[in-house]
Image (cartoon, rainbow, N blue to C red):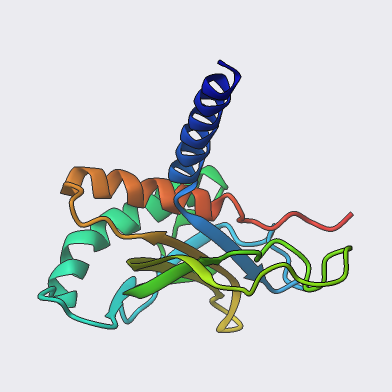
Length: 197
């Protein structure tokens, strides 16, 4: 009976952890110019060469130009919506404080785990008890969004955010739009950077 209860507990915990991992989905990080005053910019504009680009490591039948045509309006709207929540509005006079450009990068990635990867090189008892061997290996298609905010006067990038996630091609266009908007919102939670006290 105790073994059956333990098995049920292990299954429930595994299901919960799997759910947490699935919800985590998008990894985000940002870097910025620590000397830049992010309280000054009030307007933004899109890069004169275009708001974004799609770069693909392998084409696999996809046309980057058509993908950009399909997803550029979604990206621009998601970015503009999130920036408006932070007080940055689209410049109407053609002279923005911040110029924005994004890249969508698509290519292969992999994850692996090793038996003993969370154990120190030499455990407290002196000798490693097993050789490091791969216990799981996963190859997947990864999508990365790189969002650059450039000071228009200085022509220098002052903030860069990166969001990465696994691409799931079975999703519908509507599901992809929700995922893009959610990813941009998560990414721009890191903008503007918190001021030092």
